[in-house]
Length: 102
Image (tube, rainbow, N blue to C red; front, side, top):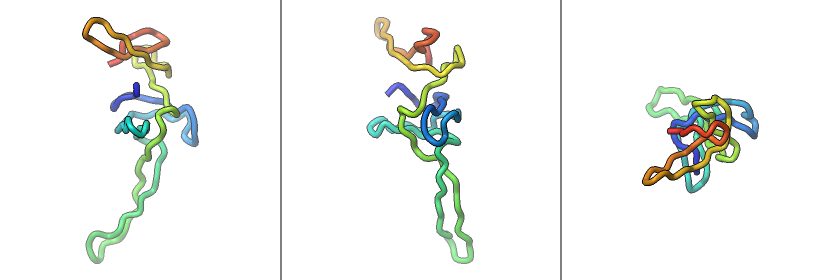
């Protein structure tokens, strides 16, 4: 999986198409990513103490990695990523501008 935690992405499919956000968590085995402000879900929380009220909290949900594209920090466009190996070093690069991505 070429998407990593901390990458900026844009959603290309689904109900949140066009939204941008930062990747908060990655589940490589399930091919899912957690993106801030995308796929917002409501979670109902019980009161923890007597006399306290329950709450409804909004949290982001996971989306499939195929529904997102990484935004290149150099050219500021949504693009696919590739890998290059130079000697001992392996790095990701933008396929539009051929610049290395950290």
